[in-house]
Length: 178
Ligand code: IMP
Image (cartoon, rainbow, N blue to C red):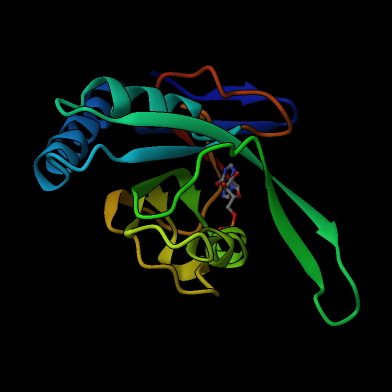
């Protein structure tokens, strides 16, 4: 692995493929152990989480379902401000064990706006699994139940994360060279 260029910026190797896969196997093992017999519903948030979701899901050893959603942000009324809503969630969450799969929790804004909508459906349990989080950037505290890596507040690329549309295909994670 070496420094790569995407659009106008340079990125250096940060988390290798093997390290990523090892950590994901540990997360899947913990989920399989904790949620045995619960038939959890995994909800992967697109676009960024598609690789993480696929790798977590294929390493599970329990019965589980998965659904993919996209979050869209639009301007609400003056009192509601920006509203985040989902496209593609057809499942009924009532009484279910639900695990959100996220690529990265950065400021926490997206999830903090979206989670109440899921809670409204009264799942038995609502858990969050995120590959990455940037504690220094967190403005809306989110409790992450299953975390891959805690990282500094620098822009990352690869393994589902993009820079202006590119870089999602990289099997490892790169960090912006400043
Ligand atoms: P939040 O609402 O600030 O937590 O935003 C989270 C979303 O921002 C993630 O799901 C990513 O799509 C995007 N994001 C945050 N940090 C990065 C990064 O370092 N690289 C690429 N996308 C990022």
